[in-house]
Length: 309
View 1 (cartoon, rainbow, N blue to C red):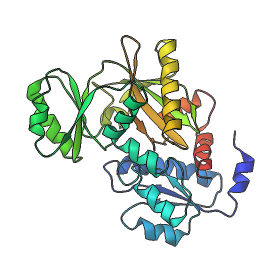
View 2 (view 1 turned 90 degrees about the horizontal axis):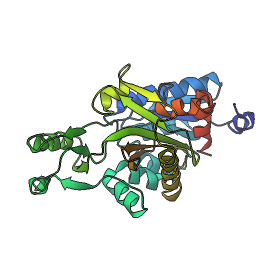
View 3 (view 1 turned 60 degrees about the vertical axis):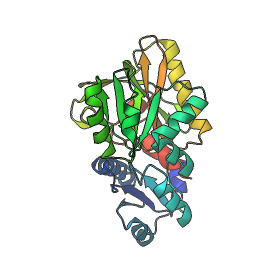
């Protein structure tokens, strides 16, 4: 249900939807931005779209926006960079602040914090470009997952089943980042838990068409099937929501987030990562989970916008 009082608060304010950007997730970000713009225009708000390219600061000043609605995915949009710039400009914005954004964009740092907080996460090692061959020679248990440390949408991610494939997978991941992690492979059901303003949404089970929930499974038509509520044990369901709410609160998240997890065959819940600017098209996972508890896409867009204030 649309909050008319909140709409009144927006009178006299101009909202700038920031999308696009320069990351490898640019095209997905444009889709999210257009979907949000469509809703805000439908509500007859004073809104504009801003493609966050290299001259984004000048565009923001030119448009004279009072609130920034962030739909930027990946580096420079989800890693604290744009958030820091908006802080300097004194413009409130949706979603997490600089600290939470930078923490969760880095899989190595976020996993260290998961472990510190007693949250189960797969074991891993982190590789730097220099002399990394010495590190991968120590891997003796397969399969493993190779990931760039700071990329989203599973870009550059590989599941490696034997040692002969590892070096190529690591090199491929280094094409996207200066740091790479090799992570313990956990077999089980892929799930995700959305959080809005501190409260967990229903747990969504993801059934990818391919081997795992990779880029094609996420964005191609019929690439994956989404099931809500997830078909997992009640204790695992509750644990997944508890983990998400605990991490959201402890690591100073704001607005909307989405935690990706695996539930293994012993019903243990393993946290993989957190998306601080998850996709926001009507077919994205957050709207899918929200619909299960009666939140329309308009409701979600406005709840996120409200987090800026």
